[in-house]
Length: 302
Image 1 (cartoon, rainbow, N blue to C red):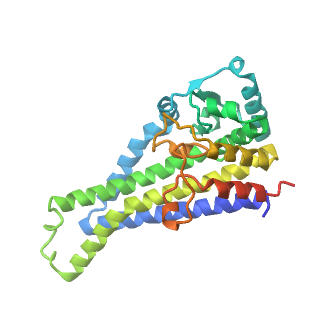
Image 2: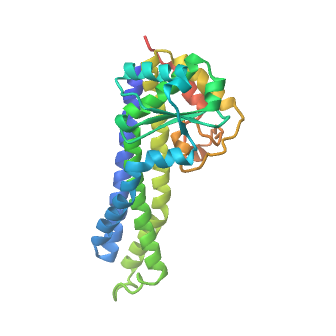
Image 3: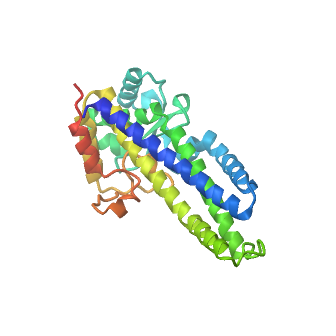
């Protein structure tokens, strides 16, 4: 498989997952609207989700940077790092993003921002200390690929959809708890209504879990795509492969890591272990490192 086929395959898989996500939201909204005989439920959930995520769309990068204690630097603070980012941005056709350093011993990095003109690349001090130049170039190219591929925007869309699912599910469960469902109409005790109620209740319970799994799956697919896209910039898969090996083997903890930001990093700051168990793999924020390294070394850059 060539590098370009790898990227195309990951794009197709990502959009397939997004389509499944849309179907999940529509199906749950239809069930709740049908059961309560009110389409307003779905409309209200959409409005609340969009409103609650509007602020995060515009200021999510600032919130993440504050949460991770990242500090902005200027060119004179680390000329070597600036030159690597600048050269790769020229190759990628991207404007120079803001550059931050996290005071963490663990080697890691992430990118944030809603688009290329409002982007930031963040690296830990441990990454700068423990990687050589070609490995650092591989990591930076990976993060710039996240920016160029509009992954931040994609993740915002996923958050909106997950929010809709959570709101719809919580609404139905609260209504059921307070007994509103049982008084809906005089035919509640009919067999058809009971079956429909149980199906809707099951959907409300399982939908948030399904939404989370799809969100994590999309995150994992985006990592594969960024790996492949990053190699397009450096033309040297071994640089990123070697960097991922060092990052995976490093035992240093990350003090400012949190579950809400873990999926942003090039490798999970919680040092997720690879698993052959298909069920456990569903809850990983990142693909297993060995799979990513193998895919990189199988690429034909030619």
